[in-house]
Length: 247
Ligand code: PEP
Image (tube, rainbow, N blue to C red; front, side, top):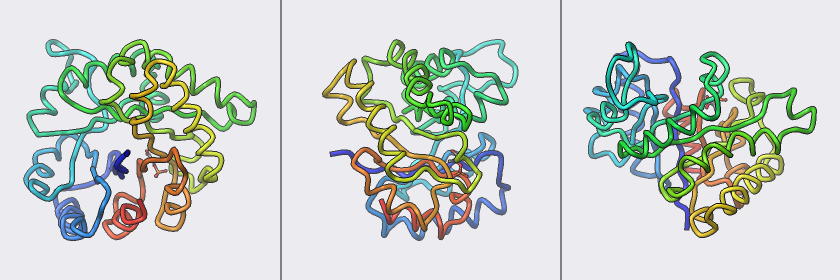
């Protein structure tokens, strides 16, 4: 049985004042939610989130981390630093990192391995661009993104989360239909199962891409959609909690 996970990705949004209001709203509303809820926040706010969410049942995490363990890597944040703030999750390979920071699937896989070694659960993002979907390459692209992940962390599938985020649906208001998303989720699980069928059956596969209160229920009803990675709608407590209640 896979417990659904609804994870928020705040991206580069927030302020101490705005976060305090959002976190208070989440804390108050989370008591009525059955699924697991997490927020992945900008690193400078981890201390605030740790203080305001401790004991709430809501988990937290970061949006990226270094592939290195420690040392002369100016600007980087290590897995162990994230653990110092009791992070449970870290997003790796978000399409915005792949696009704007030239992250390759090999690097993303190595980050996932480093996260696991540091005691974090990586939320590993994969997904095709619009051009790739229109060229009929979705399966090929997603499989190519997963291949280094299987090579690096295929023996630890019990401890990873995979998020399918079609790039064309992120922040655009365009959502994959439940059937489109399910098809790719099924393919992802089948790929993971080639490495370890038992563990693959337990891996939580999140859908991300303009998931909102009005489309969450249908998407989350699909058999291989075990939750959501939520961008824009995670910045409003009421919307985020409504999605969580649909899971
Ligand atoms: C995301 O950034 O992971 C995401 C899914 O964003 P949005 O929900 O805004 O499309």
